Length: 141
Image 1 (cartoon, rainbow, N blue to C red):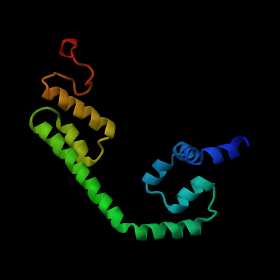
Image 2 (cartoon, rainbow, N blue to C red):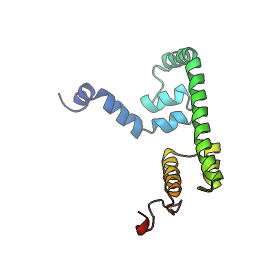
Image 3 (spheres, rainbow, N blue to C red):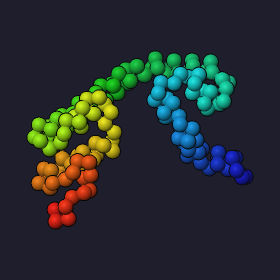
Image 4 (tube, rainbow, N blue to C red):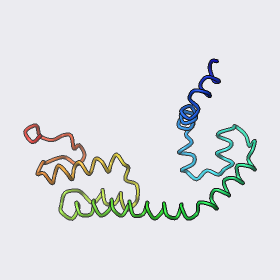
């Protein structure tokens, strides 16, 4: 057994995930793609489209409550981020820009980690540049 057959048998989920990532599927789906658009990206055509649309409609119908709960969790998560950043802003540890990003929900996980490091350093009295938290004076490390 070689090639595609080997990969399909030994690594079905890994290969599917690799394809999904390389095909830009997350961006497509997160951008609000329809079932037809996703089907075209996956299959290069619309084979099986009606079945997929029916399954998708069924899934949506069965998971409305779960989706609503997830939205509530997401809202609470953003509120918690804003509360943390707002307290840091009010105590003079960070600039308003970070709070605005939380309000707009454009703050990335990397940025959040970055600003938390800045807050932590400043709480310890370490003078750190918010644009470059690693750029701390050598005698302050």
